Image (cartoon, rainbow, N blue to C red):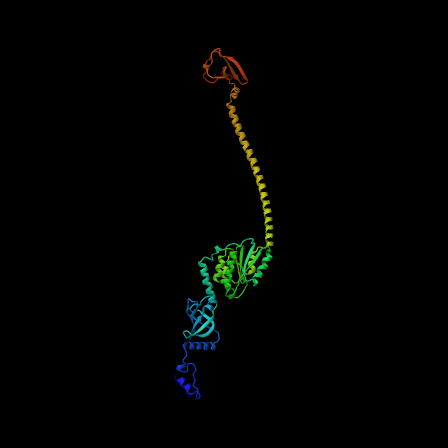
Length: 410
């Protein structure tokens, strides 16, 4: 090695220089070399932001992400270790413009120069929007965004579970508004982290506790406003599915009015703010009393109107019945008179009144033929005003033609 010889040649007399790698005998291991290179590179480059385009992205089964960051003139290999990848909303796509925060280093195992990325941001809302859309598609595929799933809130809840941070402003807003609307409603705070890496798991566990408890009438889940990263736990698929699976009606109140999370979409009711959630969940006792009073007045007025209409209808019906009965009596009277006339016309007494007489023997049998009369036989002759005893003479046939006026049959 010429360099080693020159070093030895220029060493002070009597001193043999023997630094690592300076001679074949002092050769160093490859690992020592790459480790030294790693220390050198990391010492020369402090952590910094780098901008470029993602290409050749690969997600390893161990959770590490590998890709190349390039521009028009150069490229550098990048790695995101699994511990950092779990903090990112979604993996980048090839061709996506990103800014990456990390440090230049050397991977001693292979001696590769690479950029170790700790944070990754896409242009605009790239990574966040991608994660949101992918989760939304899975939820939609499973029917969790179907409006027909949504349940109505109970009209008069007795107990409300509030899943949120016990130290945040949201829980104080909910308690203040709920107490003002109805002090009798019981609020049970189920504490949970609402931001940070532990928030999704904490929220899932809190929702599971509420479901196991089963004593609440409904659930409010949410938090106050914050940055996109602060609110991201409420877009986590685990949290969203826990909200959808809750056996109780759920009001989601995440952030401010303009913030819409996936929890808002699967919950039974979305409230713009935690205060609005309390207003939706807790009916105002004062408003309820006023509404009941108003309904009472309406019912009284309606009952009076109905009573008046019923009385008028009864009066009308009575008059109709009177007229109908009068007409019925008249018709029956006319029919009876006609029947009486017919009966009178058919009555034997009427026949007698017209000048006829009826002959009857001792037994009361009517003698209507000439052969029934024997000369000298006694019989009764029935006339209009009485009975005349008579004795039969010699009978003779009726004359041809009409009877003479005034004659009576005998």
